[in-house]
Length: 200
Image (cartoon, rainbow, N blue to C red; front, side, top):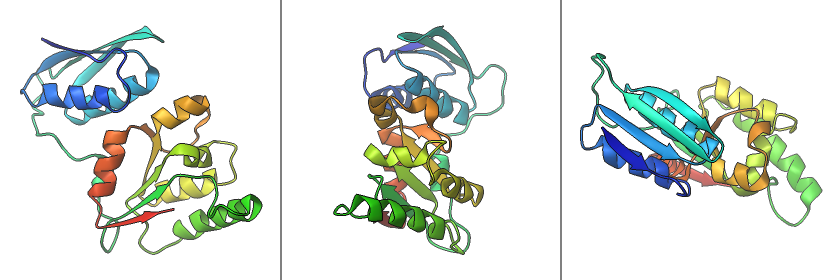
């Protein structure tokens, strides 16, 4: 069994280290991480490759034990869910790094970003991915006026990726009401794998 020691590693290192171990063709491994966001990201990666994952420990020290057991699932390293093609056309990725649309007038900017997301959710071909980073992660809070629009997008097939490093920084991870707490590696794969990128 291979051990991946990602203790003290910042996002997206735990995912990158785990992917490197998977490329060796292992069927059993354990991954050591020190935060819940890393647990979520690494677990999602492993389960996507057909591994059964057991998590032990608590904040500050987690041990993920993964194996394929007698499963017939083999597969190769797959692209994240964000790489799915939007209905009827090219894949669009939208990167949002702020709580407002524009910077000069914050009140107007908040109205505009809400209208932007609401309109985006009603497009005939919704984006494949919406990635939220920096203050943009606050748009996904369960009590934010924009959360319902993001839920509508998710319901239409858009992959909502919320930067875990950012939610940790702001201390709001537990308040996120939509999407997947993600990492820089997954977000970059989704964005660079898109046919078009819109940065807001």
